[in-house]
Image (cartoon, rainbow, N blue to C red; front, side):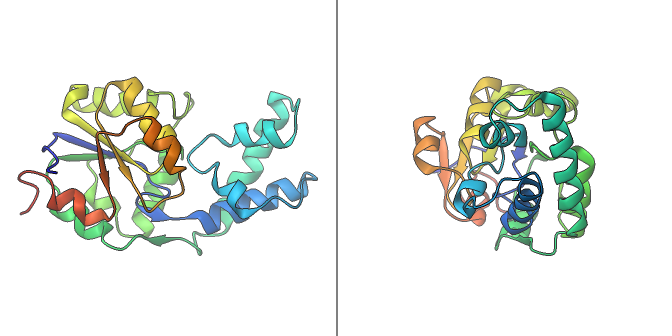
Length: 218
């Protein structure tokens, strides 16, 4: 099945472009253990990648205050950055896909914009993007805000944009923004939850996006 060419492609980062679970989960585990929560499985922690961590804190610590949740979030961010992305790698085929895919490219990630720019630069991916949009002081996915920011920046209509991600919040955010969606099978998301949201397209390898896009091959 061919994928139409879009003016704008929006990419989730963690689980879509980068295999970053090792660094994220280690920083989350460190934060939670220091706060008294131990014994949480890797699979459980991975299930929150791409979602706002305050949802995890509320589940692990029922009744947690917003102030304490923000404190834990700040502790996590410091622990995550201190790791220097040592346990993160680029998924095979991602650089080639970004190089061969036409159109404008931006991100739609739960990370903040500055952190997103820095990590993409560290792994040699920043130059492929026309813009880097993270979640900066507004609701995170599945709310559509991070997608709408890029649409507004480029003046692109929702139907001219494709959201690519590995988890249900990516697909739901795309639906709420009115943009077509493409699910990837190599990330951390729950496949059943993604299927329930009926992505317009699925790909099982990054290069498929370029190879199956009309005019995507240079």
